[in-house]
Length: 213
Image 1 (tube, helix red, strand yellow):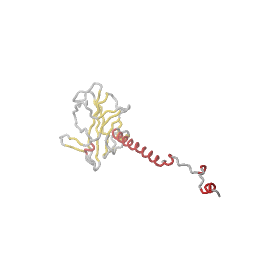
Image 2 (cartoon, helix red, strand yellow):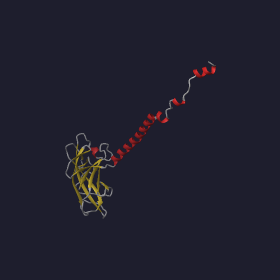
Image 3 (tube, helix red, strand yellow):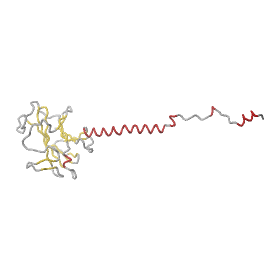
Image 4 (cartoon, one colour):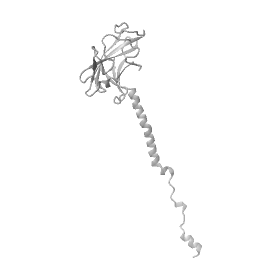
């Protein structure tokens, strides 16, 4: 056997046709890419959900409908609308100037705090009124005329009685308060809804009380 034959026999032959194909970059990094995509999506979803929750707390959009006189549980208490009354332009309870194109609506509510509910926490409520077109007006605005007559607290949990002594909402005892609204003058109250909101409460979850007039 000559030297060239021995060399050809002893040396392994490289067969390009049967060599394993190199693993592609995408296949080698598939798990890493998948994990990165999931984490990236989660990083976008979580802040979005948090911002959506904050927005809904400030701008509640889920109504809990209640009829006048009906007690409804909400935010650690039971609530009801006792009366809603549009004041005539020359009503003696209006002790201050009012625009000629405006009117005042008075809404009287009662609230009974649940056991363990702090009265001052109920003061965080916000009163609003909405019309059929979705326009909103806040209770007790700055252009509200000075009011006379029976004085009720303007806040939902604390205030002062007729003898100027402090009063507050207590479990098992109705606490009366009043919200006043300055609205475009109209003879009918159809289509208006009164709202009780807790705009910064984490437990309201975008809900508010809605009382149809």
